[in-house]
Amino acid sequence: MEFISILGGYFSSIILCFAFGWLSYWFFRKFTAKLQSRVGPPWYQPIADVIKLMGKEFFVPGLANRLVYIVAPFVGLSVIMVLSFIIPPGVADWIGSYSWDLLVILYLSVLSSIVLVIAGAASASTWGKIGASRETAMILSVELPLIISLLVPSIALRGTTFPSLSLNDIIKNQITGSFFGLPNWFIFRYPLAAIAMLACITTKIGVKPFGDIPEAEQEIIAGPLTEYGGPLLGIFEITKIMKFYVFSALFVDLYLGGGDLFPFPLNVISFLIKCFVIIVVITILDTISARYRITDLPKWYLSACLVLALVDLIRASLGGM
Image 1: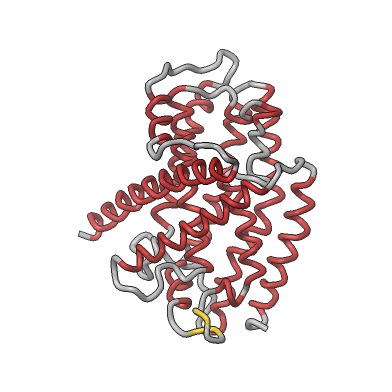
Image 2: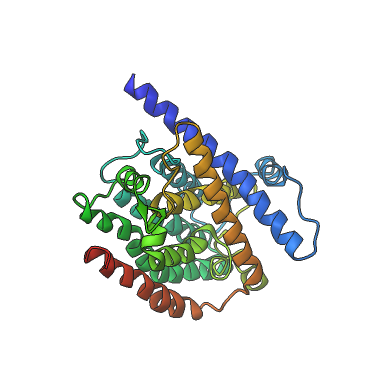
């Protein structure tokens, strides 16, 4: 019976992830177009693009590493699907969350980026290799402040319980009590780490000011995915769509209290509304930002974002001072 519950939770989380990601990606493109005085795509455009790619010819470049080239998109999609199950949809006692799930999220988050490096290197394309090197630079710059900002809420639980690596415990801590009349969300208690994490997830989703550096179509065509087409590119497109849900959901659970203390399904609705607010913020940031140079990436993330995350890490370690 428990296996059936876990299986049901897994498939329902994947459906929720894809549905929300689909609408979020469409909103991202539509709202960006409106801010730039363009019409923008219809609501069905993201899924239409995927269907079109799935119907095209399956091919592998002659000089590519065939096995790695084919496996990479499936690994990337699998990682995001597992993340969509582990990250609670605003529910405090989510069946996919465990006592150590934050560590798994850290590893899978890095792996989702490493897949693009492997894909670009395996394609044997000059543009793909340049994109892979840029993705590597982004991993080295972004992961440290991201890891610290992910761990701040966990360390902050030391004041009530032993520091927990469970998202369930982090959500439970935020849905009760208040913070100077405000909700007891970690974004109010540790705003600097929240800002650092928000900056980091823009790179994970692949939006400006830094997230589109590996692709940079004006410079290197499509970066790591230049030689990909047909069904394999369609799988990468599905992965990109689902990332809109996964990383916005992670931020909401860690810093915005998940779905609050509402009963099901109101907690899930509250959670999705918060996720949508994060998507709106990310869309505005993408629209108003130019794409920075690759040399600016470590300057921002290994200085400003890292300092912000470290300040709140020290505060959390000292009991929220």
